[in-house]
Image (tube, rainbow, N blue to C red; front, side):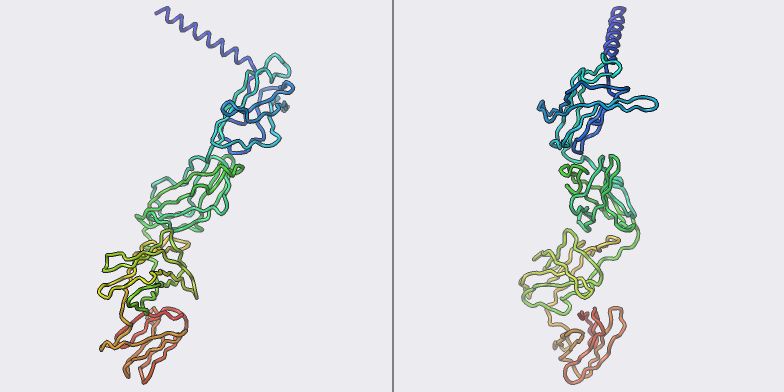
Length: 431
């Protein structure tokens, strides 16, 4: 037992003597590289010492990668004299800043006995070796809200990086609702010392529907290191669940071309009209469905605007219709969405494809209706049939009784109206 204690004491003494010997050399207080990943071209590296220093003439610092010399530069001394002490600096400056290949680890080496105290030249450095890395990417991003949190409303959501960043081109983030991209958001990018932020500003606090899952996605390559455009971000996401009890209305169309156009043997383009701004989601789909269950054809719609209306068009390219079957056109949920403010999408909506010729009297003789500008012309009416034109809110615009020949009614302005012939009513669109 006594022998073990003696050996332990001797080992400790030897270790202390070794540390004392190393500590008697010139040791830097800090170095400007090595503590953090390097996301910038390297133009300067500095070592700080307590007290004035000198550097042997012609001393070179070398940067290695896998034992290969990547760069060398002269080391110079620069002593800063303060009121309380002098700080010595060994400075390495590269004439052209180094843009070292990313995704690698490097080693900076300064030879031993090349830096020494100015007032005690026998006190010099051991070989100084500092490892540092140039990352392949910006690394993991930290979201500004916790993942899987519950969120009622918010204006700003984004991601933090551990270095300064810059946007790439017109950088954007994607907001998904139940897995469907519903909004493309311009990125707001800012930075501070060793910190970067990339996020979205919705312009106001918007509500997130109760129980609905949302994800904000920052695509890969949306931002880069501030001074290294080739070092970019990985894709980042943060998911959350809405908790707003605010009643959200479905985004519904006010008019469909099937109301006054009744295909018979084939179906081509079907138009849906909205009286408020809409945009397509990232996964828009409209289906032609047979017998309420069989999807005959699915198409990606297009969106245009005209005369204050937003027109969603689905082209079924002359798909044949069987007279023995029933058909409907279904806009899938989340096909269109509000472009700003609260995220409101359309619910799934089915419109029956009526293969009849339009308004009919009780004796099934067809009534023909055409529109020319703001004029609506009806023919085939029985003498004395009451005809009324109403606004969408139910207020009356005009009332007539059929006489001999066609009946003409004028709408005061473009929009959706209801025309009533006898006891039969139908929506019409006046452009």
